[in-house]
Length: 181
Image (cartoon, rainbow, N blue to C red; front, side, top):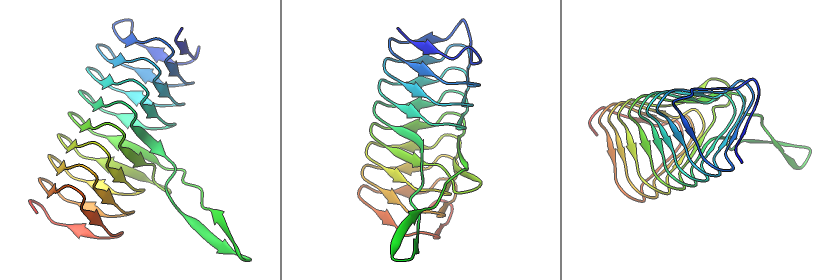
C-alpha cells in the first residue's frame, strides 16, 4: 500500500511501511526504515541507518544524514513563518530553502523544523532534540546540542556546539548562543 514515485530511488535494503509516500526524485539509503503513514516529499535525501517513525513528514528538498531518527508526528521542512504587511493585509513570504540534518541526530515526537527562507536550516551532528520543540527558519544548531521539551527557537538564531537548552525555554530571533552554554 506504499506509494513510491517512479523517479525515486529506494534501496532494496530499506524498509517502507504501509501507506508511506515517497516523492519524485527522493532517495532512501540502505538499512533505513520508513514507517507507516510517513510522507516524504520531492527531492529528499535520506542516508543509511535512519528511522522515520509513523506519521512523520519530511518535506521537499530536505537532506538527512546517516543514523537520523525522526519520531512520530514530526514535520521537517515546513514553511517558515514570515509575512509582509502590504495594503492592510498580511502576505505570506515564500520560504524556498531547505533543512539539513547531519548524522546521528534524533528529533522527538511532534517537533517541527522549518525550512529556510533562502538557504538552509541546519541541525548539527549528534544533536538530540526532545518532543514538542519548534525550530524556526534559518536556525543553525551546532554539534552535540541537547534541546529539551517545549523549547521554541525563533528564526535565524545560531546555537554553537555542545549547548544545552532546558525545557520550555524560548529564544528570540537572530540570537547567538555560544559553545557549551
